[in-house]
Image (cartoon, rainbow, N blue to C red; front, top):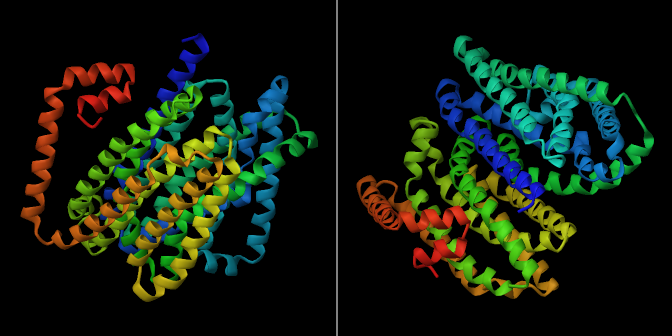
Length: 481
């Protein structure tokens, strides 16, 4: 492997570790906040985070995405380009902020937050994109150490300070304390980065704006659709059901992060392997290896689904147990996500990003329509099932896109459908065992024990395959191929 390749591999490894730490912070601290704060405050905060995620894409135009290509055109003035897109993004956000200040009562009522929280949100949106701009630059030039430092320092500080503030203030001030502590740290840190980027570039050129907008604007729809698919359910639950139900849903949904982290880790190895096989024209190997991977993941999801009541007890405590029935459909949705991601990897390799965007948009629209229909009728649990339907729809959308490309036979559709719908049926039936704690844990202990013994007996061979990143070798040792 050449020097650049080694550096890229090293950078990719550290980015993955950094991502796991950042996600882990959120996952590990949620049980603490859920126990300290009231369910109403947890619900309002969840709604607040959802709105920030949605509005970040719309109000900032995500201009940072253009830096990826700008380094080819303006490498000799990359900081000038970064300064320009940062200032232009601020101007756009400031325009929306001015409108929000004029219609403050209507805006805060519609968003479901206090005026103070609205101002904090806009201050965050004004300066935080500077960090994204700088991080893209660091990634392009493989300066991974700076990315890690500027990611972890504010992330850890914001969590610790917000937690400390929540612990020392009275109960009626905990929501404000959490918002101030978390986003206050990010605002101060982002402002420092903002000043650095602008002072380093000292430039604003319309040429750079004209270059950035055609790149960034098409991605806005894709990123917005992703945000809507992930967060619109909480906003709608708050609107139709209230803050307590939003807290129930958000806490239960967070339990599924275990499955999300598992798949992200698997896809870190899977996607590059798929690209290499496609490059060599060895398409048949992809489908052959995908079968055991799908089975392993589905089995892991079903095992975690059995443990849903205990996961919820750990994440939120006994007061959140009514939301246990949210977990199975959300977790089962990740099986559909695994399947559609396999098709997305093919689309990505063949540079079909517009198709990826269309699929995400269609699924987001479908999810919103279903939520509008079913949340008022069946309550917040319905949103978990509409999310599952949205991911299943994405699977079919991307299958049809890949079929148009003539690459659909890489994966066995019939096998994937059997696993998907078979898992859904088994997963839903498992919910009837939630009252039978002893029986559930006998099953969990039996499966986990058998898996441990199997892996322990083959640990040396598996270790060799892991070092070589030999996916096929691992599956052969496990007798799955």
